[in-house]
Image (cartoon, rainbow, N blue to C red):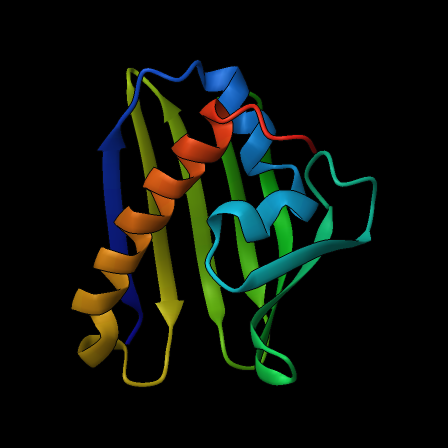
Amino acid sequence: MPTRLAVAVETDVPPARLFEVLTDWPRHPEWMFLTRARVVAGDGRGAGTELAAFTGVGRIGFLDTMTVTRWEPPEVVAVTHTGRLVRGTGVFRIGGGRLIWAEELSLPFGRLVRPAAKIFMRWTLRRLIRAATSGRAR
């Protein structure tokens, strides 16, 4: 049974700025804890782009492969997770002063990790907002 997760945070960062940082795949380590993302097919912009995100330290971790399925700047980017460990769908929605992250995933021990995952997701969204307002170099 899929695990459904959704969190939202309030923000006054312009949607275009959030979308820009969110979809700047090499910048993921700035806000997505212990995760490096890269484009493996496509130009990194638009539906059909294929991504590989490694979460872990050194060689210990897991690879999350994804295909972008919706690309509606500056409001929506959605993916299908296609990896061995993480499978399902995810979407980020930006607008109305809110940043929303929702996932529907087939995860090992999904029900057990759900509460911690939601805390982590909310913390991650706050890091994304900080990255979008910090003016850090790309």
